Image 1 (tube, rainbow, N blue to C red):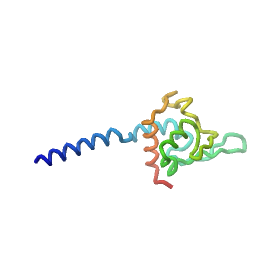
Image 2 (image 1 turned 180 degrees about the vertical axis):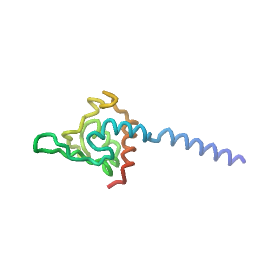
Image 3 (image 1 turned 60 degrees about the vertical axis):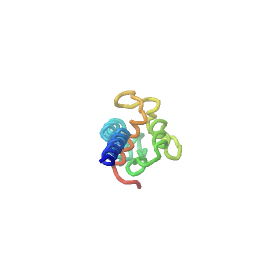
Image 4 (image 1 turned 45 degrees about the vertical axis):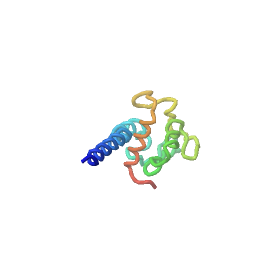
Length: 127
């Protein structure tokens, strides 16, 4: 009986630790849809966006790519506008300086970024 009580207590503790560190997909979806989907599409599909007459700039496809970047690389892309090869992205907002579009000016914490990246993983497997 004592082993059963200890096992239940250990499982309960493990479940509480996992739930407190788990990403919040709803929060990630809200942040993505309010700030990222405008350029990257509702499912991270990317598209060409016309920015000058007779010219287009490719908006990066996120699905199956940056969702699976190392967190530090993903964070740098969002906050500093640098891609996975440390190149400046010309049309990517630098959210680390200006804050979010919605809520206006909000600065992203690591938890927010992890929620966004977790939500992006729901778009599909790594490619």
